[in-house]
Image (cartoon, rainbow, N blue to C red):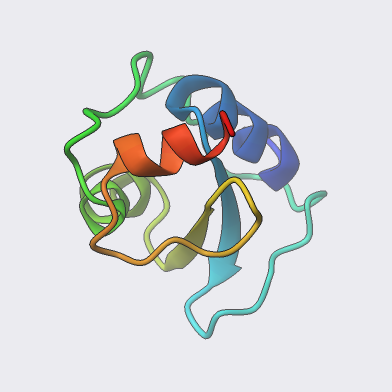
Length: 95
């Protein structure tokens, strides 16, 4: 089992964007919280660029971390909208 901070780093490394763990009521989770499964144990390759942020949350994030939510951040630190394509999010870090 990993810490929130470690899993956020795994997501960034695999997916190419920053995702911040939140509770269902949208509060930020402390990075030192332990006992959650690692992301890299389940996914080794990034999700397709034509997948939306909401699609990534439904198909990847929530399947591993039920009861939790996440914000996917654009390169400027703003949360991405659910209908934003992951390729758009990833490209925002290259500017």
